[in-house]
Image 1: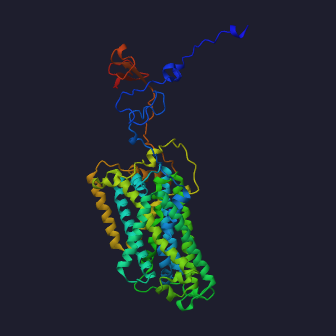
Image 2: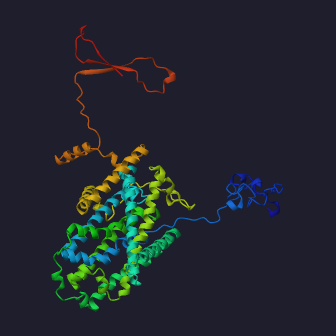
Amino acid sequence: MNKSEQQPPPSSLDWSRFGLGPDSISERPRDRSNEQYGIGGHQPAGPNELFAGEQNDEPWWKTQFFISEPILFGTLDGVFTSCLINVFGVIVFLRSGWMIGQAGLLNAISMILATVGIALITVLSAVGICERCRMESGGVYFLLAHVMGPRVGTAFGLLYVFGQAVGCSLFVLGLGESLAGFVGLDGNVAAQRGFASGAVLLLGIINVAGVKWVVKLQFVLLIILLLAALDLVVGSFVHTDVQNGFMGWWRGVISDNLYPDYFDGYNWFTVFGVFFPTITGILAGINMSGDLRNPSRDIPNGSLAAIFTVSGLYLMFALVLASTCTREALKTDFMISARVSALRVLLLAGLYVSSMSSCLGAMYGTPRVLQSIANENVIPFIRILGRGISSTPSPEQQQPPSHVVHKKTLSWYSNWCNRYLSLFGAFLKLGMMLMINWRYALTFIGTGFVIWVYVGLTNPAVKPGAASEFNFLLWLKSALLRFCGHRSVGYEEIVVPPTLSGVELSPSQLNEDNEDFSSRQRFHQTASVRPLYHDEHPDHTNIEVLR
């Protein structure tokens, strides 16, 4: 058969089903008679054109030309760096030697271990919550509100924000005093406040610029801090300064600094109260929960790594100063670490950076905690603080959960999380507060109670939190059963008597069957119970049970 004689294949497909019909692919004429033509931006040629429904009648000035996305961070840049620059602060540089001069090396090590232990219990408690829920923005407030409810979360969250704000002011004031003394204006209050205000303004501009710049600056500050610590270790080997109390190694100095020599009414708890605030910034990584790729994984890894790293730095400072400096120099010279260092300028840079880094973490993390409290609307008059200046939605709005976790494998830190350890840590911190300064402790507890009552009065319908599901009597019952060797079950046990033998049950319908209600179950029934073996005596009547 010739090619000219071949018949074309029949077109039996309905191409309009796929958007390829004649009406779909032909360009429709544009209505140029409309006065609004030309000022509404791009006009789609047909209904199948991409974005035809979104931008058909939208003016060009309302079109989003710049689509911004949230910048998310990981374990190293988001959590580890934030935690380490907050816990390796100015107190380590200025008060480590004074702590050893007062309490001795052995007690100083016990204070360091107690400080790190309390912080470790706090982090493990937070890790346990992160593993059992989907971590959201809000940091400390989210953890407290998820477990204890928004009332308790708001009370402690506001106190936490206030404490961080006060700590930030102390850090920048210490920086102002150091800079004023460095330029020869020691004792000039105006110069000290001027340097402190300038530092707050500079850090505030960096925070407003965005979290990307904050993280970049944190890396630079962390490198300077680590170089300052290395400078202290190297300087203890390369030179001495006998006139200022720096004797160097192998002088038998450490034997004189082993035991305590308190003066001016100090004791173990008061000296511990001076050193303990250096670890309070360990929650900085948790406060970045809204800016992390995987908070449930990044927060535990970064926070625990920061605790272990800073523990080594604390012990290194204590060992170097106790082994090379006299007790009198440790007690009276707060800048003894600068005399031990090889390059004084490098350690002073670390001292100034430690003040700025702690303030930077407080200025970045605590506003997010306050914003989460305001967004919950538990306190009406601070609701305005929940509004942002950016039109970009939060990461939680842009990244909804893509799957449901059915089973999670245990992490290397999962076995460390224990509810009883967290309870012990709570009582331990409460006891430390009362022993360090009972007046401030009672004021703190009273203020938290007042906020808790106020939130309950202004917003009585607030959610109670996961801790409300705890039943003390049920827990006590299960504990006693486990103690006696019995298996504890999660449901209520009911004693069912055995079935009576020698009787029969005969059901019967009370009402007639109806086709209109044939799909329903037959509830109106009666059951007659009678013995299997009986004589037909008139006194023997049936027992009927209606249901």
